[in-house]
Length: 125
Length: 117
Picture 1 (spheres, each protein chain N blue to C red):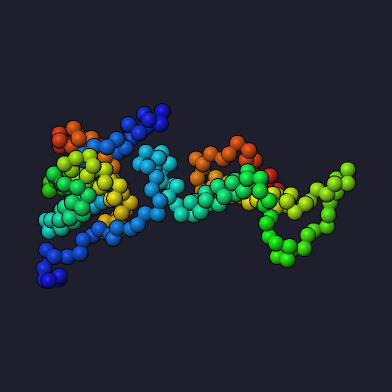
Picture 2: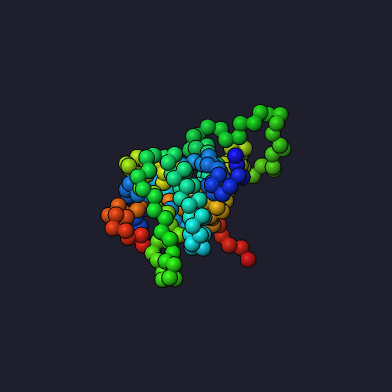
């Protein structure tokens, strides 16, 4: 008997939306809820992933022989040891991505505390 | 310092009273029927989280004098368990298009009829 009068009508409450991720209340009050932003969550997840990869000591580039793209010209140091090994390049790539993610997070949340080893990118003219 | 801020902000220390802020406009509250509707919605939704003891929706003074707490809704629960669930569940929800903020409200203020906190 909806619509038969003013008594029975739809509640003004929106549907209860599933919340993606809940921090404890006290944390939410401290951070103003910014951690609930899904984009920041995605950045955070990727950052943790990269940190884990860099610290694991496992080979970073585990693509099989056939699936790799051509290597750049080798660069050697004074001792004739190759600098830009596959491992080295993979590490560089991840480190760069990590720096970019941290820059992004600072931009979105000025209160974000970057890790101690983070250096802001040099501004280029 | 962080703890002090929490205490002064209120809203973080659990009480049996949940205050929903920025929820209704003064114009809506002047209308008796709208007021009843809102009250019904509050009892309906608020009751899902625990036993509601009291629901207070401050209304504007008919003589136009400013009246404290207009726009807020206070839900008093039988226990902190209910109020904590309600705060968690209602915070960030939308009511008639307004994003609701749910905070704990000091019980002594509520019982003194001080809705201005």
